[in-house]
Image 1 (cartoon, one colour):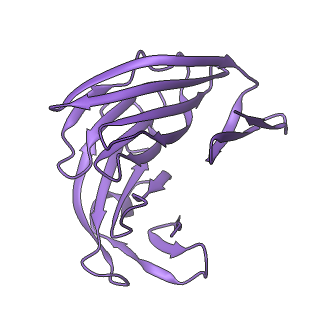
Image 2 (cartoon, helix red, strand yellow):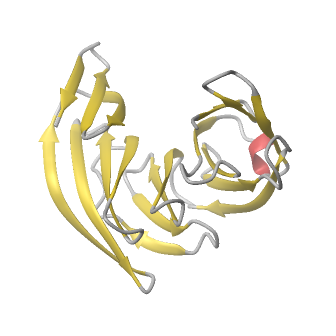
Length: 196
């Protein structure tokens, strides 16, 4: 199931039906929501990243009911440009306008640390490639420094380990979507690239 978030209301992409309104928390008062996500394993949880430098977590008591505010995490230094769940919803990854990529526990919002050195430019898009288990995944990031980077992330006992495994120089990419094992990117100059 894929959800599309519009303003503060979640809608199912497949049929346009409502998946519930987002109620409470700072999202209603912020000026711009940059990204919203839900774990593929359960659509009753969602996270919203916004330009008030926060990530807001919501939970839905039952399908179709309104999403209720759970917690807000402030990152303090940059707009939250992109948010994605990883590890079947166990972890939350956030890309910031200052180039940092942070990993949090999905339920408790405990900050686990940064992915690598981040980017010299602001994060424009994030994608997650799930690994063999919940504690291993890859983070694929495009940024305003015209780079696409892929990190392998391992988490053991809430300790984060990251390794940069790929870096490619591209035109400035405004968005990227992971489709199977291929990454489809759209650059600001209008080029669409499919990368393995």
